[in-house]
Length: 246
Figure 1 (tube, rainbow, N blue to C red):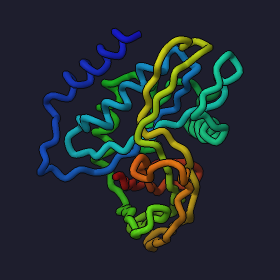
Figure 2: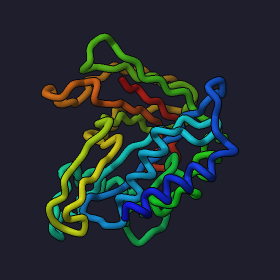
Figure 3: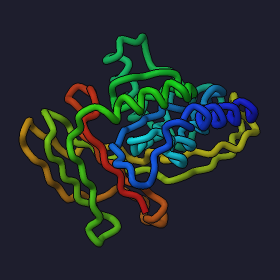
Figure 4: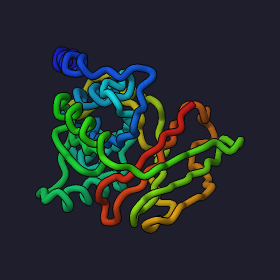
């Protein structure tokens, strides 16, 4: 499995060599969601790919905003994923309905709410992220308030969307003791701890709201990243995204 993960990262790098973004390029935020589980033996390569997308930002013109959403339906076969939640399984089911799938699967990657594919497919990820970066976007901003437990979200230029905020751990490590990944030490990036809808925005209207962040008071706030995004109602396309990180 380690060899597969290394090959994925090398393939991602090779595929992106012609499209590296320079520091002077304007990057358009693109939301990349990975539905994954520590109980799934096919998921670690997808976790590695997500980390590589986050770290290397290999698509010219795109600021890749990643979220790792751990589903809970693998928990019954030997290992309870400590980062899993039925909320993320339900969100994945919403996508399954929209894309006409029989149900959710892991690993699954969704780019800007518009396309889905097997989450370890690096070439497909690069292609879909590049296309998403060229689509028209609403302007989304998320700003610190001086209080680490609060943030301000502003949206302009959206059309009839729901406004969401995700709070995610920058990184997490887990030693898996049972199940398909027994004995493996798994690493994750942007592990979602909370994903909530904070409001709605109508066509041509602006949105502004200061919110409390549901972070663990025992964890250094600098270990979190906050993503805000606007999504078409009915869990459709993502219309705009912003990221606040330490």
